[in-house]
Length: 338
Image 1 (cartoon, rainbow, N blue to C red):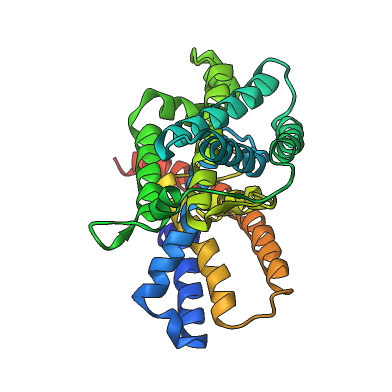
Image 2: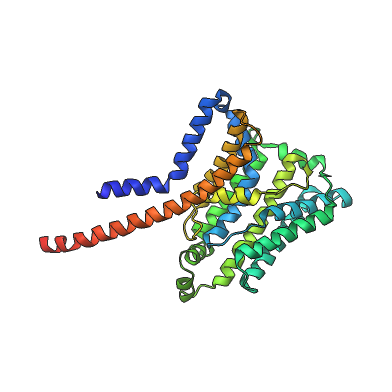
């Protein structure tokens, strides 16, 4: 009985990996072109900007929060960078710093609304999502802004001749995120707040400071994700970032991070979730699924991610309670044997 419980628990904890394998095999069988290194390289490259955003979203969701403003943040921050390059001749690197500064400011506003004004994260970030998009459209006048060739070359360049730079930036963001969560006091505090906010307060953790920090991190990664997206596309379009918040949330939850907080990882969880989302989108293109049906399928995937999260949490809690009962029942027998 114990073995079956452990097996069930192992399957539930690694459901993302199983989904990854199933999706990969299905699309590979439906389209032989899917089973190529070039295809997988393109999937990683296209998943990079959503993956970077999802890394920051992981920090937020680990505290049982949500950030709906990341899409607007991507658009606003990348628009500022593009306008600075176009109108003031700013170089790519200074424009990136300006982009990240806008993202950090966006995150600070979210943090203040949630920790100081005490607006719940859903409503606070919903408000900044609308405001950020409006401000971005005001700055750009809803026109497409081209970026210099230097930035486009950045999006198309490769490290060591084989690794796409956007993919490398995604990997670097994931490694840094993983390091913060697993090797630093901030990471331990984030998990503590997500597991039980009241207990974290009693342990002396400044809960509001931790919550504020994760929204600033999310703001910075959203801006970076927007910059990487624009570097690949070569232009800032008015539709940039629309709906990306849902893809980022789906990637995080599919990667095993619980919407209830306190459980989840960047590596391999969120990374695998982001690649899985992009793999499905690419697979739908390769198998020539009707373009009008594809958004419905993606919506179903987001719903599945939330459903899996709820199911996984309920089942894991049941298994833990069952294991505790079994251990308690075994204690008297062990004592009697002695």
